[in-house]
Length: 328
Image (tube, rainbow, N blue to C red; front, side, top):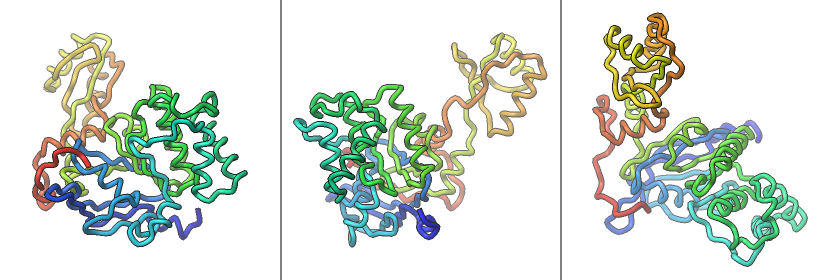
């Protein structure tokens, strides 16, 4: 990727809206995604994530606002966008009687790769997503997770600069989820911009550099996100002697929460306070064996936004739109 291309945001969304009759699926979405980064798209069911992804993928026209993918307008120049972008939807059908290998070769030809180039790229991707043993089997024999791997391979056929992933880990076993995280980070390291939507926030925490929070069709403001991120959260503390831990916390004036086999929950306001508390516990002679946030940063922020904690002045999001019956 040349330096000039790197200066252009891979994805630019400004004031985008889309309705279906009286249902306001997306009301006001604005964000950017930079080349070489992984951005999580987070929101509850019905928040408009899928509708937004479909607009980015050139499959729906926005009613208002602007979108640019690698500098191209999906409405004015959808062909250029599709050449620059790989799209992995939540569910992508396949030709049941066609082999995995042939499916990828055909996809390559659709992206105007030559016959030999398409064949070579298909083999590379089969190895990359771990479908070697099934390469010459018809796609109808694939499991849900194996079809997800094939869908990812199809999205990568033309070596896109921008990658949209909708629930990519759905159906994958634990080992395959780890492989997916490694692959996504590798692609970002090669300069690809990745926007990934998933309900598994712990997975996103391990791969994402940034996040876009979507609620009732509107993206949360940067001020509101930062406010939510900074709220007091529970940290989980596990000690060699749980009773000694509770005693020490009480003497330090710290209110302990629930205790289970994983440890004791303690409310902490930020990493500096956490570091100070750990030092005080160790100084009190408590043998600490585990100390960390009870949930990841993305999950904590999402839950705080969902609870609607008091936002800083001027950071409020737009007023609620009519409730969606289901996510579009």
